[in-house]
Length: 222
Image 1 (tube, rainbow, N blue to C red):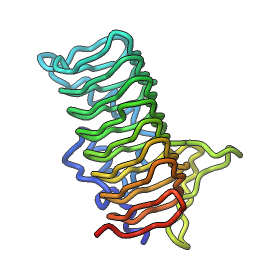
Image 2: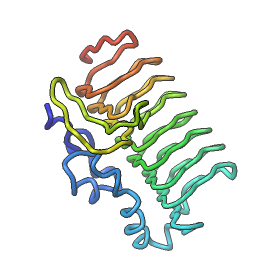
Image 3: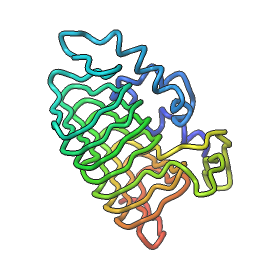
Image 4: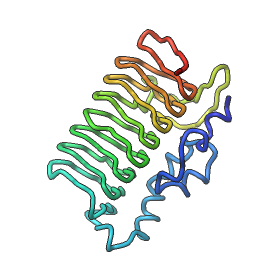
């Protein structure tokens, strides 16, 4: 099942400007320490006719919609058609893919959002990758650090991968839906087309096309 965790099996990599970065590594969490440098590298190549550079290493598409009450700290790339809503907080090292939504009071740091991703209401997204057309329900959290602050292992069944990283949030496969007030524990991996019930706590790897209910039951989609 370790092969199921490969980036190519979780995401359509053509749906992110970060495709060259992700393709350098086998597993998605391996890119987390490189997001900052990648933004600094690729930002310099973005067309000045399409992007406006603001502040320190912040590139914003001229077709993005940015609320005046939002706060964006660099390095960051905000692509075309993105909507950054009231009081959103982009903390740096963030790529927001085309036509995505970062909503009111949502906080994002050191993460990649693929195209058409939605984090629209009171979400926390730390050290995470959200796949194409994934959606976070109101108040859902991508938790990125264990309470004992030790390094995070990625678990798939009885198999375990040591990451040597203290901060990893969630890797959310394409088209996955996360219900309101659900919590993805550090190192959670969702395959494509998963559905997480509201008020559910998830850890480890969930196979694609599965539903996780708030009593811990996991069933295959029909």
